[in-house]
Amino acid sequence: MVGARIDRVDLRRPDLRAPFPRRFARRLAGATTLELTRRAKYLLATLSSGDSLLMHLGMSGSFRVAKAGVSAPGRGARDGDAHDHVVFHLASGADVVFNDPRRFGFMDLVRTARVDRHPSLKGLGPEPLSAAFDAGALADACAGKRTPLKSALLDQQVVAGLGNIYVVEALHIAGLSPQRRASTIATATGAPRDSARRLAAAIKQVLAEAIDRQTSTRYRAERFRVYDREAERCRRPRCPGVIRRRTQAGRSSFYCPVCQS
DNA sequence: ACCTCGACCTGCAAGC
DNA sequence: TGCTTGCAGGTCGAGG
Image (tube, rainbow, N blue to C red):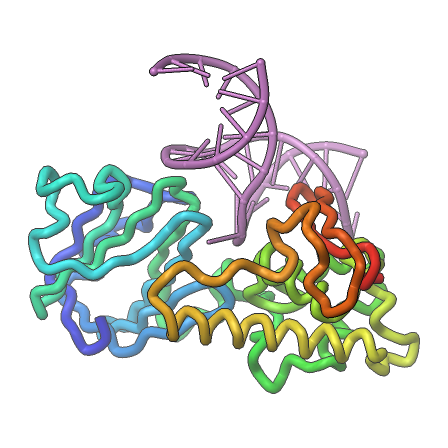
């Protein structure tokens, strides 16, 4: 998309999780994508028009690139044509197709000068892979929180961009229980405890590995350390524990009761 | 201010 | 086989 002009946008339904903004397709037509960036779980296309296109994949959203015409309705039953909701027709001849069966995805247009003030972006915590995110920042964000660590890490204001799987994975690496009270990784003076160091490092590790896997293999990612491994042996070397599953804040946590506390 | 829960929507796997 | 149930990687608003 970068450097390519958007000739036309095909909007096949009025909404995803929320309605598309007014005149969505018309505001995009003719604009060139200058830059594609990311903030937390949001994708951001900066356009020559002065607008930025804000996008979220939700749980089931995906983009694919097709040659012009391939994704036109009625052309071959590729998986999920019924869920192709937006098609960006580029001047290069490529079509960028957004597919989202569950429609938990999201798109909006914002003036580029004001992206940081968009309701979805303001208030987000630090990027976990940035230097700004370290044990001190994590400890500070958790200080005083009575909520479980699991919930704190899913809170995008504490740290931006972690979802259920990577929270669960990071807690296992750090040897911390998902049920543990968040405030216990900070001290009264604000100095990070060793647990905060381990957790911050584990978060960075888990994300770096995930990104690396995505870029190095086209095929299904390796399974996770604990996620979706209920009743299996803990994979930490020499740990005799058996992985348990437990619902927290409406979502599944997986953890080893022996090495995570 | 902080927290938990349900709702949003479809697809899929497991169980009967 | 066919039906029902429960669960899924996210976010938001309502309510305690």
